[in-house]
Image 1 (tube, one colour):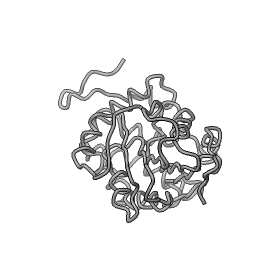
Image 2: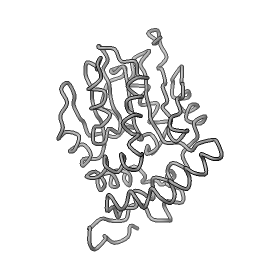
Image 3: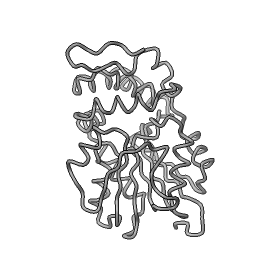
Length: 261
């Protein structure tokens, strides 16, 4: 059972220590993630910028470069949050013809919709049950979202379902550096400094920024994520590590006759 609401904020504790021991195994993980994001929506972008040392914008720009946009592309951004990826792709010189943002957090979507982008739309839905037809988009993006899926393989399979043959999935996600020195420094930062700093900025009492390091450390490594893409129906998968390996961009091509160059 959840703890009682915090007396000052009214927020319920979503992630307590018992659940943080294995956050990806929680049967109600999806609901907890949704409630967590509803709570942190007001400060989400600020926290991301501060805790990443303002590198988050550069990571999104690299997503754009790796997506190899064509003017006729239709893009779906899964777990779009406050719309920062949508806005980044919309500002690209050869922007997609249409951009759709999808998220199951109403509070996040409200903030995304408050800054409308021409040729875009936002819909509230679960990433494991996307309300779009088979082979209806040519690019699927997701920034720091697949780690929060209740079922990673099911979420990637849903991406493959809605992609046209030759379509691209471009996924940005945290990972733990493999080099020992970077790994130790990163683990110290993500376990000790980041939760304190993010909580100070957000005034969060749900446990969102205690969930973050646990969810990263216990998430499958890059080789395992590549294998998950392949089992979901992607013919080609490449990994682009960034910032000493603390994040990676996965570019996966949907199999079919129209495969990209």
